[in-house]
Length: 105
Image 1 (cartoon, one colour):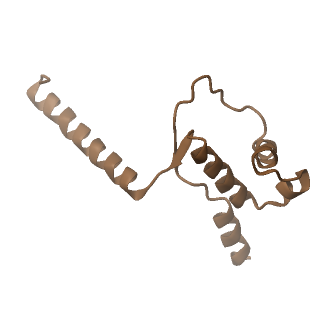
Image 2: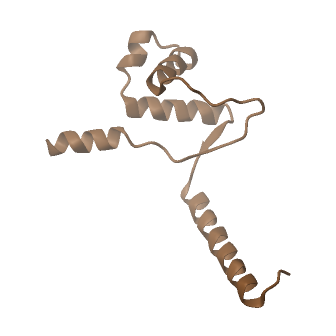
């Protein structure tokens, strides 16, 4: 049972992505599984059966790779995370300075 839980946990992990603003882009409102199926069929030329037989985790990464190839998203790298954390610390320090000094420079 533990192995199944570990398998499902790994299969459901999603990549960390950042999304670029796409001009005229609209959020999807359809069921995620159906959306994955259609994209796999359209972009990877899979049949309906092949798309539905694709493991969920693999399909999510395929969709992310397609998005990156089309320029609508990218994978978050360790450097991005570190830069974001450094920027957040700098912002917090600046907020504390403003609070202490009562003014902005």
